[in-house]
Length: 184
Image (cartoon, rainbow, N blue to C red; front, top):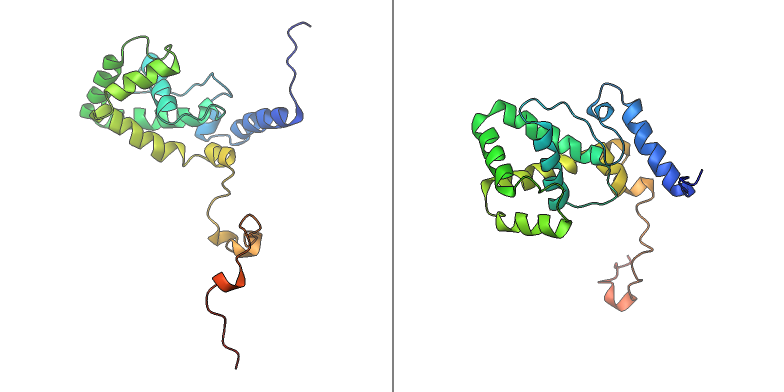
């Protein structure tokens, strides 16, 4: 009983929502990954060790500490898929991972940042940065994390859904508001 974990309501809801999202969307890639720091994706072109190291690279390039590993696992799955289709891409990834060294994934964040800064102009880093940004920010898990509701057109646009509320901006004085309409 000494090892009880205390969660407040918000943490409990976030935890269970992330878990249920992965379970409910059966057949989707989300169903292949587990909540939290543990993740599982079927890799075909890369080894699980390489996948773990790529996960550390992606998390270091685009760090969101509270974003589930499952979202980053989608990036690794896409990279693995690309590597399976193109031998030169797979070779570039393996060389980049080798240049990072065997302990990269277990290193501190500052050490990972320093290692990646040394190779930020390499094809490996540029490919990882591009794929991470493209895939990570297009995942439904990232949408939920950042509060993005998706495109608005199919839902009637933004103005009719409460986004015409500009209370977060200061009121503009009349004299600074531009020309007044001419009354007829």
